[in-house]
Image: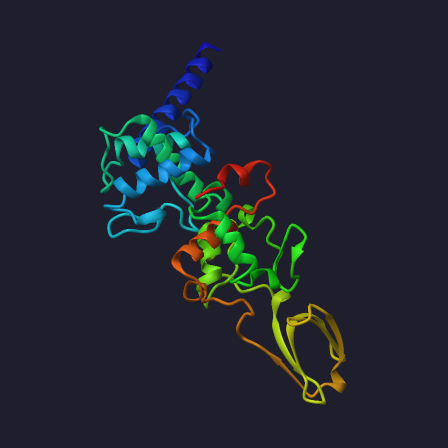
Length: 295
């Protein structure tokens, strides 16, 4: 019995030593270290963003993007070796052996924790790290100049052509929201993890143009079809059109989305940033939008 206990103790010690060596090689602190005291605090996360952009962008890119010497820290479709708050804290404070990641012995621990909170927020969805900007201006742009409300609904207000956006910040990353506004090749992203960076658009928003016998054209989103009929939601009238295939002149399935992708050209820089700030705060999580509001 004593021999068995000694053997069990030896195995446990070997496992602990192996985990410790693995952590040293990987860099960072222990996976099960202390929680981040600033996790989920919008003001602290914003401070972490500022510290990161001031001190970390020598190697990494601004706002968590890839830099000339360092990788992106919030890239979609990537699994990260250092995930827990203590691992990220340790990597910033102590560096990562055998890599270009240096230690930062002069950075206060509170600042390191704030940067770690910001990095973890980047790996979450938009509501975890809402974009900075004039939220009130962004809301005005959404319902006015941007004409977003013609197709999209927020809290029972707006159009029904496009996806409902009341909780878009809960399910999309900020980069995905920006991409949807600016990138003609945009595809719907997943919510993180090992997924392709670009996915095919959902067929529920297939744009279609139908020409009637009298020459009238109805453009909209295809909702249903079979060999004898089709149904589409009209862009101009928000009405559901039920059409007999035998009584239409032509049906064209458009390859481009109805969603404009040129908002950086349509809007001023301040308006665009405000729109992103507004969208990245659209959540169903109680208290989150209010905490993240402001410039």
